[in-house]
Length: 163
Image 1 (cartoon, helix red, strand yellow):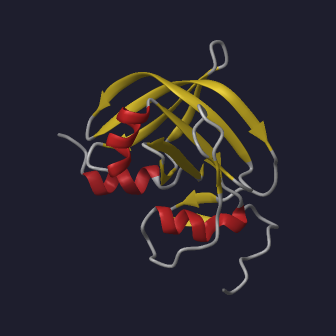
Image 2 (tube, helix red, strand yellow):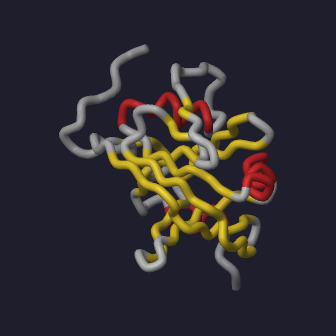
């Protein structure tokens, strides 16, 4: 008997993850999506993946762009994560840096990876976009986490200030 989707969601919600902003550019327009279904696959060759729902706008964008950026979000960038997850209409300040042919980079991200899609694999109602990392940058800092269906911070990190 198959597992009930809600139970799977609850169980996987107990797995704390980092939060990223996936970026891509098509015809001069930057597209972004909050994602935590991101994984390092291999060091040799340097491979990562992101899983994107087939019904998401970003799915078609990635198919057209052929590459994406993984921007690891800091704890202070929670409003940005909410905005690009479409949990709010309140647009926080942000800036994308464009250095073609690389995918757009989010200014202030803890880390950035420029990724060239090498394979797209079916994954149920998602597509797994496997990519080779062509470039990486690391700034470091306090990460934004996702746990039990909500954003979280590492113990000892200050709570966000009211905005």
